[in-house]
Amino acid sequence: MPTATKTKRVAVKDIESSSDEEEFNGFNNPEPEEIESERDGEEEELERLVFGDAAGFRQRIKGFKTTEEESKGKELVLQDSDVDSGPGLETVQDADLYFIDTEPTALQEKALSAALEDDEDETGGDAPAWSDSDDERISISLATRPQLRKLRRTEAEDVISGKEYSRRLRKQFQILNPVPEWVQTATSGRPIKKRRTSGGSETSDSSSDEDMDLDGEVLTQQPLARLLQDADTITNRATTVNGAPRKRKFRPEVIDIQRMKDIVTSGPSAITCLEIHPTLPLLLSSGPSSTLSLHHLQPTPPNPNPLLTTLHIKHTPLTTTLFHPSPSDPRIFLGARRRYFHVWNLQTGQVEKISRVYGHQEEQRSMETFKISPDGGHIAIQGSARKGGGILNILDANTLQWVAQARVESTGGIADFAWWADSKGLIIAGKNGEMTEWDMEDRIAVARWKDDGAVGTTTIALGGKSEKSLGGWRYISVGSSSGIVNVYDRKPWHLLPTSATSSLGKKPQSKTTIPNNPTPLRILDQLVTPISHLAFSPCGQIMVMASRWKADALRLVHLPSCAVYRNWPTVKTPFGRVTSVAFGEVAVENKGAEGDLVLLVGNEKGAVRGWELRA
Picture (tube, rainbow, N blue to C red):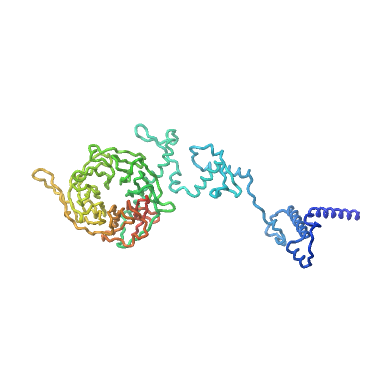
């Protein structure tokens, strides 16, 4: 028996040796044609160390096979920490410590896509209004274009269907542009739909088939409706402290001012009209592009001052757009160089077109310039007729019917006009520098006075409330075509009505303390081109003057000192050609009851930039 066993082992050894010799026969390279040069022992040893030899190569291959066979039988066993782990991991091969993470198979990837689609259906909201059947038939390669490689889930993924491509693009867009917070808040709850009956009453119905078509419209208007409902208390909290009006005091010559993030970076046309609602945090901007934009003034990051909505009126280059000042009557009046103007009701979304002023069509051939009284009761529209000077037609703001007409004698017509603070009269500036104080109650001109210098009056502005002054305004500034701005103090100007009746039975004329040629409080000559814009801050302590005929032509003036601020604007302040200016107050949550005074400037490139003014 021992002899047989020995013979068997030898036979196996001979078979292995013969198989190895056949397997590595190509490495012996026994070609007799090659003539080898004589080499010494040192050279052969060096060649073996660098390139190796057949015997060393066979030995390493055998060792690799042995290691691979042993690793197939190994199992990973989790042991408790209290048990002695033996000699440790010093003798364990690297192949046993790591594994290669392979990509998912086609079946796994298909299951993953189906799971993601199910998740999207559960959280995606409303179903799409339209589906393209070609999306299933087309294929898109994600690996060919570098811009699409970010849509891959694995490095080896390449071709996907059109539907999957659309879904991944939508998901990538939502990651880069998250939904604003005010939209999430507004759409978090489903609004109760209402339908109007023939009698005008509204009945709520959460499951009416007639209201399904209006559901999308209700959701679209919901953010603006909620803003109009809650913004009154927000703004009042920003302008009062402990129930009393908050008083801020600015110092002269140096002002603390900080630039805000641009509300609009550029637009299709110049911004010729800017206005901040006096009680609601709303900003409107418009221009010759026939489009009005409405922004929510909310300077908190990450998305300050979001755009709420826009209104486009075809073939109507807008020249004047104004808010109705009442928070309970959120309407916007839009005028252009047309025989008609529009009224947009923000609560209902209805846009009404007013085609004519009955009885005065010939005098009112254009509605491009108008102003609303501070109490919201009347609208003054500048007439197109210049016979005898100029005409203002006054309409009732609610019924939009003609009420009165103010006619002034001025060479060249009317340059500008403004309402008194108590809405009981207007001041009308003629292009020849003559100012007319017109009383709404008596329908007469109570005073006329001449601007100092009187070189081509271009615009006027009233500001700084004072109950003792004529009309309730403390200051009036008058701009001219030479770049000079005259500032007058109206505090000593009073209206002195007489109660006596003349012997002829005629109503006596009211008298005032306004001199015929008053002396300006200060003459400002910092600008050298025609003045196009003048505006006072709500507190009456800051005045801005600007000219659109020269780039960066804007200055701030402190009142009552009439000192021009010398630290702002700087040479790097990016105004451009100023086409509109507006002051307003914005509520800031982290400041409690105190808000910020903001200055907004629009330019010819369609940009709207803002600055915060701090006392």
